[in-house]
Image (cartoon, rainbow, N blue to C red):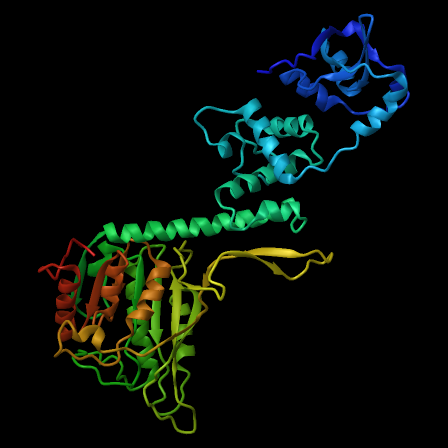
Length: 503
């Protein structure tokens, strides 16, 4: 494994001793680690000294000599330098004056040592070095904890083995993606090794997010989806239980706002009292809960009604949702950039609605939030507030960030459905952009989604374009027929009941 230098000679350890000029300058050292490493890989670094009449007097390398004695080595590798006795102390002072090594140099040398003493064929270095969980002292991979201690000792590094593991993680991350300049930051004392390590863990999450986005995009393009539209009331969905939707999103009829066609006996939205309206809303929700997947998400877009004065409909609707057993994940504010000219007595022009995002009780939900570009539009390290001890803190800012729960869009544009049938009309459907934001965030390609008030079918089209199967339900036969026609055109099939063509 090692090539001998012509000056190096192996001398029986019985013929070696520490030079008399040096022995009085020595301090007691703990050489247990050195003994252990020499047992494992032998003596890697020779000792220096004077060879006189077959006897070798050590001037530099006393700890290695004592370790060799303690572990029972028969010979020790030496390099004769034969300097005058009066120069020995001066020489030791010079040899101990070391130029500070950069962390990049340390990591490069450590990489060589680690691969030399512990490489494993066919495995990534992250696996054999145990880089998957550096925070745990019990997890060091196949090569084991001793490899890092060995590298620290052999290279005489000024850092502990636990710090070396983090340095190597930063070093290898830097080799793959140097856009954050973390190794340079460590060498310039901008970051500590621990800070840089935390930054790469954040950057790894960003890379995972980007990889997921690419995977999702590919899955959507390769996904075959189907669409079904049912003509029925949504107060009983038991016939749809076999589909077990993963995601439901709908915008129910608002109370006393419009007189919708073909509403059947319930006359949903035209109930005499708010209590009756909320009771009907609850029937729909309970019926939906019965057929949802146990990890399902339900999203409802609904606005306040000012007919006859403010009645706190949204607050009461939220309490009704909680009463059904659903768990609220949160509420988004939908702000309309071009609200309809509604006049409210003694109050401002209404321009907002609510989006209730709920999950089944105890559900583990999918959440891959809609993102927007940051101001800088690129990934970078930024300084945050200082810690309690006054030191600087840093974080990795992605090129994009999660949108807020304030969503601003125009109201529905009729052109979204007029291209499928210019004669079809629908009062105030929810915009496709709203459906798209929530569908992207709470679904994966291949899931099944349902809109229990599907109306003009904007939700069904969005579900399909996100690689999801779609189920639509509506009491209005005109809406059902239009949705079937729309999904025929979206998915490119003549079968409006079940379509299996790639979206």
